[in-house]
Image (cartoon, rainbow over all chains, first blue to last red; front, side):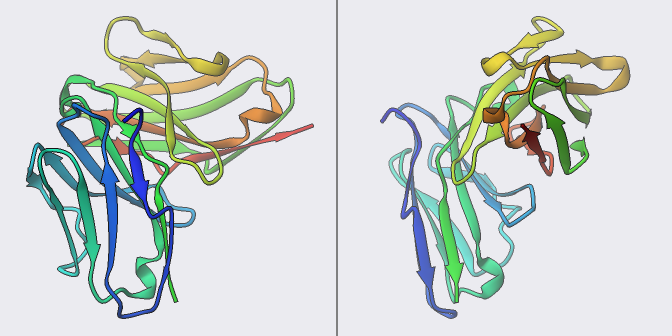
Amino acid sequence: GAGVSQSPSNKVTEKGKDVELRCDPISGHTALYWYRQSLGQGLEFLIYFQGNSAPDKSGLPSDRFSAERTGGSVSTLTIQRTQQEDSAVYLCASSLESSERGNTIYFGEGSWLTVV
Amino acid sequence: AQSVTQLGSHVSVSEGALVLLRCNYSSSVPPYLFWYVQYPNQGLQLLLKYTSAATLVKGINGFEAEFKKSETSFHLTKPSAHMSDAAEYFCAVSGSYIPTFGRGTSLIVHP
């Protein structure tokens, strides 16, 4: 696709429910990132994929969070047993290769999650 | 290890005035540096990036930034602010495979 696509754009869920957030990166981009942005906060790194593998999961805040990437393309971030503190914008980004070579990372418009 | 500090969570300027958003970084390897802009309810959009080709980098919408190694800074400037520049601005550093972002600076432009 032309850009990074995320769905749903908005999600309201009840506390305790599971949610899945989807990211479709730019075609051909091998690196994929998930970040979380809470109100008034910066970007919090969650997880990084290179191809289908996730060499760095260090940012996942708890074991309720998991992510996978299949076919070197689409990624899904799953939050189990959602809590109110999970309310945030979840941003997905991709780049041609990993950013250590200065590759620009391109962001989607985010999935706004509200847990009530 | 790498980190970014953006000085000032909010910067307020009058339309037509100089815009200066400050960013200082630390990195254990030669860094790549980025400025992104986020308009309300949108994702982040690249304004400009430094990749060691030139210390003064020009970006979109009239913005530019200068890499100063001795000061470990990468401040963003624009000579004359427009109302449409009101947004959140993020500085980022990347020397590893995961870019690190600052906490952001909200630019407010008064008529």
